Every structure is written in structure tokens, then in C-alpha cells.
Image (cartoon, rainbow, N blue to C red):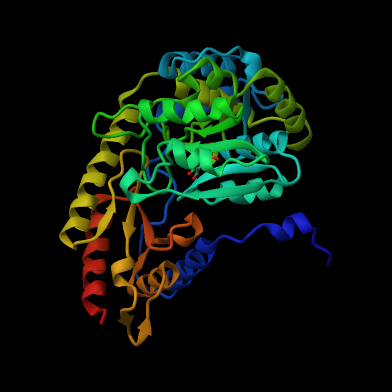
Length: 395
Ligand code: PLP
């Protein structure tokens, strides 16, 4: 059957191979500790679930306006004002079925064939695939260890060409957990304004921040940035609501209208009762949410301690729930006669040993593996006991 050029361009996820192997090994009765999850292991808090149940009982089961329920859009405007110091009118807000969908519609509305988007690496692999699908080109800029794997203003400026349309930033970052400071964002903003670029700022991990650090939205650092940034966010990670599929964006009005038109022809609207539950998530203050963050922080400290004990070096995560470990010192060693030369080979062998991790290569960081600490302390403990034994078996 004919498959379109566009669909053929999209790469299958490298992680799928590992996930499939994990499933197979588990079905054969093997115990596997998985550090692969990109989502909280907690269930959605009960008070949020209850509000969805009430919405269903009240008949909130129909289409909603394309851009979202008015009460949710108002709650999102309030959130932006309170948390980020950003003023938007409801007409600038589009609710979608997940931040992934918000990103896709943004790229689709922004890009023409050959337009470039600057993407600092390591980055979440979906960005590049979506940019390609929308006819654009991801201009990848490798960030440096000495800069905490964050792009500098100089690196940004030297990546700009006459085809550059946009800049993508993800702070806190998946996969590194890196968090940009206000000063760093201000320096980037100067370059972005000088060249008249649009910024797409993925802030989905905004609330998962540790060590007393502060999240700053790049949209808040100047009037230009406010007027030329699309802020992407959602409820998936903060409220353990990955399955509910609610994301949202704030955009300049012309872009928001274009995205609204697109969404009216693609998904129509996000799930009605999940939108009601999202109003509850965004407006009710509840300890459960803070307690989840505190648990992630405990696990973060523990996983770093275990990595330290094994002499592994990593990017110290300031946010999100991933530990990005440098495995390059291991390259060239063998396990059961097989040489390990890259992150995929390492991850495959470790999976056979009973620990599943995500190789760094799809994030454009082949010297690394990504471990999610959205898993129990018990699993982190057992997983690291196994990693220790695995490393001891390498020759
Ligand atoms: N942005 C980043 C950086 C992510 O890691 C993810 C999910 O893994 C998303 C966006 C997608 O979030 P959502 O569940 O709202 O589609």
C-alpha cells in the first residue's frame, strides 16, 4: 500500500524496541525494573477524579467549544497571571488533547516548507518529528556540559539563518532536568528580539522543580517575548493526569486564531469532562499535588546518591523527573562477549540483565541514558543493585 512521504518521514521510536523487549521478557516471567516511564506513577488525585464523575453525572458529555470550555480558559488565564506574571485574554488560549497536540498545531500553524526551528539538544525527540511532519527543519544545536546543557545566547545567534522562524525551549528539560535562570532567558530574549523570531516554550514540567529553584517563563522577560512566544503547558505531569489528555497553549492572537481553525478540523475539542477535571486541578489547592512533588524530590536525591556510589556522572536535575547519566566511560567494554559502543547497545544489554532504561541517542545524546525516577524508592533501590552488578560484570 502507498504510504505518504510525510508519514514515511517520521521515525519510529527507538524506545519502542526496548519497550517491546521488556514486555516479552516479562511475559517469559523475567523480573524487570523499568526506569522508562515518562509519567508519574501516582494515580490522579481523588478530588480531581470526583469532579470528572460529577461532570459526567451532570451531562458534560457533548462537544465543547473548539478552544476549550470558557471556565477552563479563564482558569488558565488566572494560572498564567498568578504563576508566570503573564496576562492573556481567553481568546489567546487554546485547550487541546495534550501538550503534544498543542505543540503539533503550533508547528503546523507556524511553519512552511523548509522553515527552520532552532532546537537545543539534548531534547525530547517528539519536537524533531513534529517539525518534520509540518514541513520544517529542526536546526539542532548541541549544548555543552559546562553550560549545564543549556543553549547560550551566542550559540543561539550563530545557529540563526535566513530560514529561521522559531526557537524551541523546554525548561525544565526532558531529558536533562536542566532549568534556565531568568538571567539566561533574558540573554536569549535579546537575540530572539534582534532577529524577530517566534519562541515555542514547552513548560510542561514547570511545577516539578527542586532545591528551592524557580521556574521563569521566557514569555515573561520582556514585552517582545510576551508578544512573540507560544507557551505550551498541560495537566499531565503536575497532576498525574497523563491519560486525561489535556494540554493548553497561550499564543499571540493571530496565531491562536490559526491554531483554533486547525484544531476545528483535526480534533474538534479536548475531552469535555476531562476539561472540567482540569478546572479543578488548576484552581483547587491540595496537599496531594505538593506531596507528589516531594516524593519525586526524595527519589531524585536517592537516585543521585546511588549513581554517585557507582561513580556515574550525570546532569544534576533541577526539575522534571529524569536522571541523565553519562555512560561514555563504559564504551568499549564487553558484556557476555558483546562490545558496548553506544547508548542503544548499553540499554539493550542492561534490559537483558533486568533493568530497562531509555538510550540517549533519540535525544541526540548518545553518551547518555535516561532514567525516570517516577518509580518507587524500592524499585530504584533494586534497580541500582542490579546496575551495580551489571557494571561489575563488564570487562
Ligand atoms: N513536553 C515534554 C517535554 C514531555 O516530556 C511530554 C511528555 O512526555 C509532553 C510535552 C507531552 O505532554 P502531554 O501528555 O500533555 O501530551
